[in-house]
Length: 287
Image (tube, rainbow, N blue to C red; front, side, top):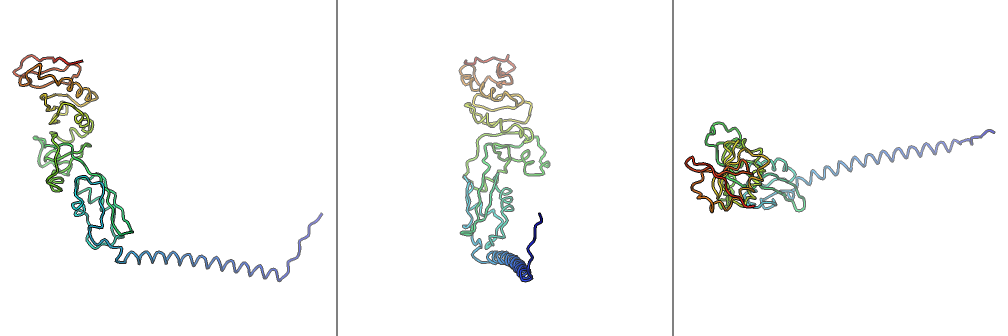
C-alpha cells in the first residue's frame, strides 16, 4: 500500500512564508522592548539614586540597636560618614569594619533602608569581665599591635580573652562600671584557657579578686580565703574550684594570717603551706 502526499498550492506556500516573517518580526520587537525596558529601569534607578530624597542628611537617620552601654551618639560619631551623603554611596562593610576598629564591638551588621531613607546598625558589644594588668617583666617596646599591648599596658578583656584598650570604655562613658576581677600576665600565657578559667572562676561561691598567670605552670588566685595555687590549668579546674568552696570553713580551723597559701594542685588532698617554714597542714573537708 502506498501513501499519497497532498500537493501544496503556491498560495499556501506564500502564506506560510508570511507567517514565519511575522513571527520573526514579533520576536525581534520583543527582544528590543526587553532591552529598552531593562535600560529604562536601570536608568530610572540611577536617576532615583541621585535625587535628594535618598540622602542621609543627619545622624538621626541612623538607627542603632543592640547597644547596652555605648551611647547611640557615640556610635554615630564614630561612623565614617559626612553629611549629606547619598544612601547608595554608603559602603556597609566599610562602616562595619571602622566601628569594630574604633569601639569595643565584636560584631556589626549595617544595612540600608529605602523607606524612609535611613541606615540600620545592629551591634554586639564586647563586655569586659576583667581588668588585664601588664606583665611587670614585659618589654614596653615589644608591642606591635593592639593585642600585643596586653603585655605592656593595662586594659580590659572580655570572656573570650579579647584584649580591649581601657580608653575604649573610659572615652565612651566615664560612668561605666569596670569589672573588679583582675588578671596579671602575658596574654599569650592565658589566651588558650582563659574562657574556661573565667567560666569556673565566675561560678565560684568563694570570692576571687585576682588571677596571676605570670607563670603558666602555676596559676595563682587571690581569694577571700587567701592565696591559692592551682598549678597548670587542666581538666581538674572545675574540681579545684569546687574543692575551694568546700574549704569555706577554713578560718574556723586555722588562723588565716598563719597560712602562706593553699595548695590545690591535688584537689583530692589540699595542703596548707604555713608561714615561717612550718610543716604543711591538711585541712578537714566536709563530706
